Length: 205
Image 1 (cartoon, rainbow, N blue to C red):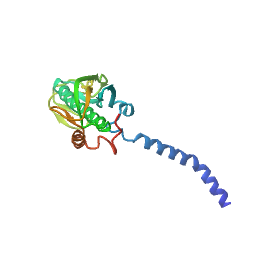
Image 2 (cartoon, helix red, strand yellow):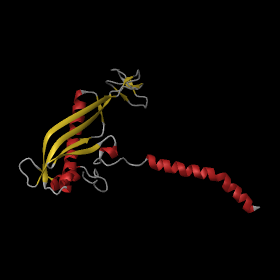
Image 3 (cartoon, rainbow, N blue to C red):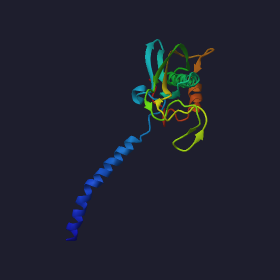
Image 4 (cartoon, rainbow, N blue to C red):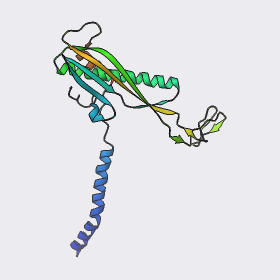
């Protein structure tokens, strides 16, 4: 009797246990960290590097940075765009240095730099945004005086900026003025962006 009762309990709980296991597996997948910043774009999807061999020890390198949110004001947009440009250029240099090392070259020279900037306005309507220049009371209790966006509603004051850098490189066995040493470039950028290459750097193309 006891064994039969225990078997009945197990049979009733088995679907719940199975559901909990599935939910746990799905939760683990959902919290998986994104790929490192220094990843191929075909792996990261919305950001990352790519390269194309041009022949004669020359390559085209590109890096598309992650999309960044910015206020729509000209000053905020300029600041965000400048930071994105610097980061994208640095990561393109990093991958170029990887290629130089993988091919047995001391360094590389950069030429024909191009910049592509995509801007996407956030046109969603938010009831907490709207012009008001009188003393205001926030819904969460904070008081202040000045331009208050709410409670009449209006478009979001944000937009999204994404920058891509594309340039050509020539691999070199000796360096001249303005050229990049592969080892020094990787060491410097690894310090500037700790963890950006992940646990181990991806293989260079």
